[in-house]
Length: 237
Image 1 (cartoon, rainbow, N blue to C red):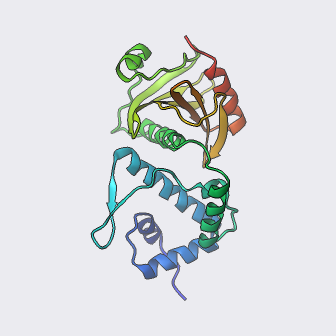
Image 2: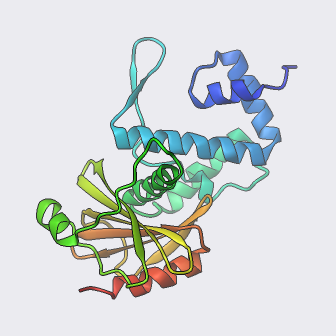
Image 3: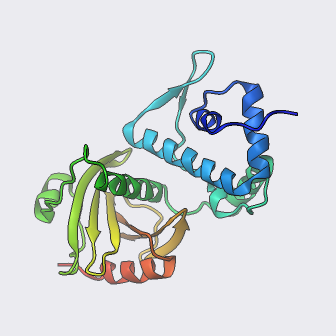
């Protein structure tokens, strides 16, 4: 029988810095505490997505190099809360066989939204609220819908992807809702009308217009985000 892991060990597990004995202890503990396991797996997915956005790679034992996978595991959309770590892997395999899920850029959209929300509360990270859609279209060939007049732009960032630059525009609505619009010039398998899913604490609606792919991310329920995206998709200058 192994001792329950400490918070420091769980953090080390996320960073892949534990020996096999303590990894087993952490995984056994997580299999018995599904809510904590969901939190840890969310941390792992964010860590992988951040590494992907920055082009980072992580060394593993033996001198090999492990690149972060392009997509987050889809078990978060399919696994029951009571599943063990092994059961989660089985559920993921079955789910992937049934559905490929949303296009890969949706992961970028959710992660960049979380980064924008982190920047908003960090004194060391200055937000860039200036937004010139014509300049962006000229330099990046990224087209953005026209925003409602009561939306205030709070941050504008470019992110690298394997398809070229992607644009994130964070906004605050008149009601105080914090949203972000993610756009990348990539002809993906996204539908022409928005489709919304839940990703952890956020909902994201994704759609395509010609060679452009978009995602709207926010804290509201998927139905509300989908309705906002539907209106936004029709709102062009």
